[in-house]
Length: 581
Image (cartoon, rainbow, N blue to C red; front, side, top):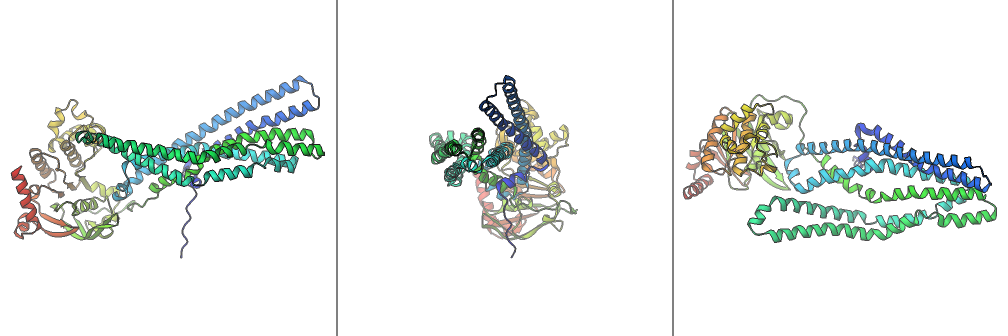
C-alpha cells in the first residue's frame, strides 16, 4: 500500500511559493544577517573599551576611534536593515500578487458547486486578508527571524570559547523561559481557529447586511439585522480578547525570563572570578555580550503570534490552491458538430444526488426546452452542459466527443450562457456587453443591444452606453440586467446558446421583444432554454419535462399535451396565471 504523502510544513509551503524571487530572499537574509551583526558588533567594541579602561589606558584617540567605529556600525546596521526590508517587501508583494492571481484562476477551474459551498464573505477573507497575512512571514520572519536566530548562536559559541561554565550560565534562563513560551503556545491553535470562525461569521454578516439593506428597510428588519451584526462583531472581538487573556501571563513571563541572562551570569561569574578561574576582563566581556543577546532574543519572541498562526493562515489559502478542479486537456481536437447529448448522467451536490441517470439528445441547430417544477434539476442540467460542473457518472458529449476531452477555453467558445441570476461588473454598459466579444466595435455592441431589446432604455440613461451599472449591476432593474446579459451572449455569437430562465424578470412586452430577437439571432444555432413561462417555448423542436432529477416525458408541445401528463398540468397552471394576470 502506497504511503500517504506527507504535507509540507507551513514555512516549507510558503517558501515554495517564492518561485523566481528566491534570489531576492537570499539577498534579504544575507543583508539582515549583516545588519544584525552590525547591531551586535558594538558590544565587542565596548568590551575593548572596558578592557582598556581596566588596563589604565588614558589615550583619548583610542576611545574616540572606538566611538566612531560604533557610529559607523550603527549606520551600517540601519542601511542593511533598510535594504533587507526593501528587498524582501519587493519580492513579497510580487509573490502575494502571484498567489492571489493563482487563487482567482483556480476558482475558474473548480467545479461551481465547490465554489458555492463557500460564502462570498469567507472567500473575500481568504483572498484578501489571509493572503495579505503571508506578508509578515515572507517579508519579516524569513530574513529577520533567520538573522536574529543566527547572531545569538554565534555570541554564545564565543562565550563558550572563553569559559564553558559561563556559556551554560548564559543559557540558564532559557529552559524556564521556553517552558513559559510552550505554555503560552498550548491551545493557541484552538483559540486562533475560534478567531478565524468568528471573523468569517462577521464578514458574512457584513456582506449580507450591506447587500440586503433595501430588503431590511422595506420589511422593517433594521433592528433585528443590526442586532445580529452587532452580536457577530462582539463575538469576533471577544474571540481575540479571550485569546489574549489566556496568553498574556505566560507571554509576559517568557518575555521577562528568557532575556534575563544577568540573573545567572552575574553571580556565577562573580564566583568564578573570586575563585580565580575567570579573568575579570573576560568576565566584563561576557557581561557585555550577554546584554547583546537580549535584543535578538526579544525580536525572535515578538514573532510568536505570527508563527503560531501560520498553519491556519496558509491552510486556508492552500485549500483553494490545492482544491480539486475540473480536469481538461490543454490541447485537443475540437468537434466540428454542435449536437449535444447526455448519456446516463448522474450528479450529486453536497452528497445528495440531484440527477439520476438522465439521457437526452439535443441535435445541432435545434430549439430544445427543459421544463419542470422548481428544484427538479433543470438548471443543474444547463450548468452541466455549460461545463460549470462535472458529472459523477455518465457523460456529456459535443459532436460525439466527451466534453471532458475538450480544452476548457475551446469549449467555452462554443457556449453562450445566460442564467436567471445575471451578474454585471461595475463598469459601463458598453464594456459589460463587450465582454461577450472583446474585439467587438461600438457599432456591433449597439447592434447586439438593439437586437436584444435594450437599446432604447440604454439611450434614455443620462450617459447612454457609458453609464456605469454599479456593483453587480445594482443601478439597473432586474429586467434591464437580463437584457444586457442577453445582448452580451448574443454578441459572443457562439454556436450553442443556453438561456436559463433568462426572461424571468422581464415584463410581457419586453419578453416578446427578447423572444423575437433571440429567435432571429439564434437561427441555425443550437438553442437550449429553461423557462418558467411555458408560452415562450411552445415552438420548441423538443421539450424535455424534468421531474425529481429524471426525464418524465419529452416531445413537442402538442405531443406532451395529448399525453395528459405533468406537462399538461403545468401548462394549465401557466395559462390560468397568465389569464388572471
